[in-house]
Picture 1 (tube, rainbow, N blue to C red):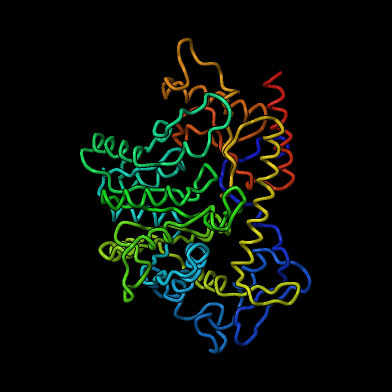
Picture 2: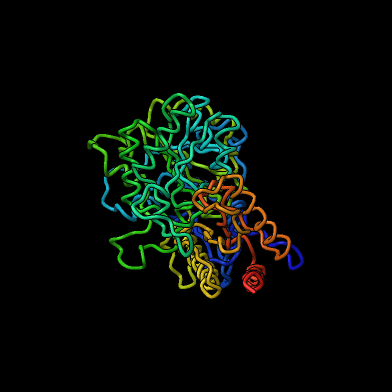
Length: 486
């Protein structure tokens, strides 16, 4: 609020409330030509969902069938624990188009709906996946900094032990004491993975079971390059460690080519595409050909801002864990009504203001979403450039990783940034965090809460505010920098 702290630390996307540029209607039954429109007014996501929720057009999988009730008789009974087949088919097609086709359009292998498990949110399916892959006390390796809630999602019930994969000391050059830290310092490599593996064995007495990658990365707002992902996939297969690629922001990549240069150099390449293309597959093999060690989690909570619907996805081609994964999903199924609504959304076409009806609603929405996020990110990064605050140039997600080390309280005598204790880092960063919040009304996510290797870094969720609030945040940020340097 104008009089309180601006909440810029929760990964919500208020930009999803904007009208979808150029879209004035939706069409469910493409063969029958059934169209719902709003005249010349551009539709918002909530308008689309409201119309689909009240639709009585036949289920997308039953084209040509008679009209149905909004709530059908069979929907009141138990559903398949892993999700209804028609939604899993629609989700498999969506994921193929989102994760594989953009970079590997000629790949013959495809997502198999039978290997998809739909559950109540990404955290639920991730917890279930780790439960079936690891025993209590087994280590999960996660590169730092990482999404802080992983420490609850994987520990509270699954009982996993988290071992950080620190990366700064595993590259040829040293991390600069001031100025921008290049993205490469955050990339995991064999050296950092081997070091984390050894520490996990020391901490738990046994080999780690899982490497969890956030790709695109939260909180960094960047994607790992394909070579980094390929190195991680190869390392996992050699060590028999399960790689889980959390790609919940895959539809929020708003700079498609690295450095804006060539389509031959894409910013984001999914582990599903890389894992498939590196596998030995036969013409008769079902699925992507990932083998037993590569898995995916995804959800609609970020790309579509539908965190309230609780729609998460786990995908695995490890047949040994598929049945236990489906059974665990008993505890976190998605309601039948929500599944029907999401199926309608994924199968509907957009009606554009020029009369074109050929594009999927999901494609049209994501294109508009990515443009909105890019513009908001550019505005924040322009402000940071103006005031001289280093940051990691973002290409995906809903946030920018900012370097506020300049404003930390001074180190104690004889201590350097590299030798500073974790306790000291946390104390100095907390003082800065509280100053930002209480004195300047800026609530960012502190880097030490995400196990960053240095103090003074903050994640700003630039989509978590209305336009008015965001502009106010930039004013407050400029004031903070000006007063701290005066």
